[in-house]
Image (cartoon, rainbow, N blue to C red; front, side, top):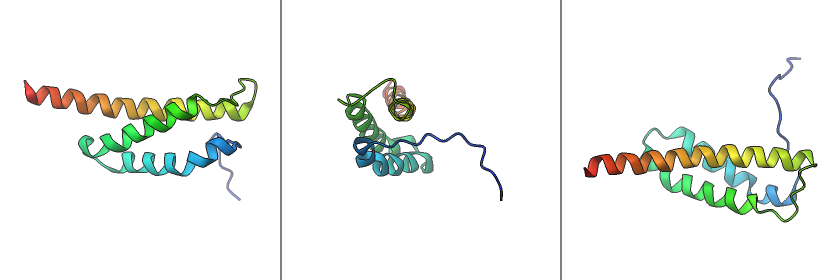
Length: 96
């Protein structure tokens, strides 16, 4: 049996679980499209979800699952912001 050496970021949280599938779908959509302008709406939706979850009332910095959640949210948000910023920069460049 082959052992998977990838780190796992399991998150056992009912609040995160409500949004997990949507986060995965948005991330897959963003990763699978080559044209930035096609990604912007999904990236903004991802930012909205990460902002919502970042304000979790049950966040406990001592809880491993909360730490994993924040890690995933911060990574997702950063990727989405890069796409949005790149789109805005490209748009401004063509307007000049």
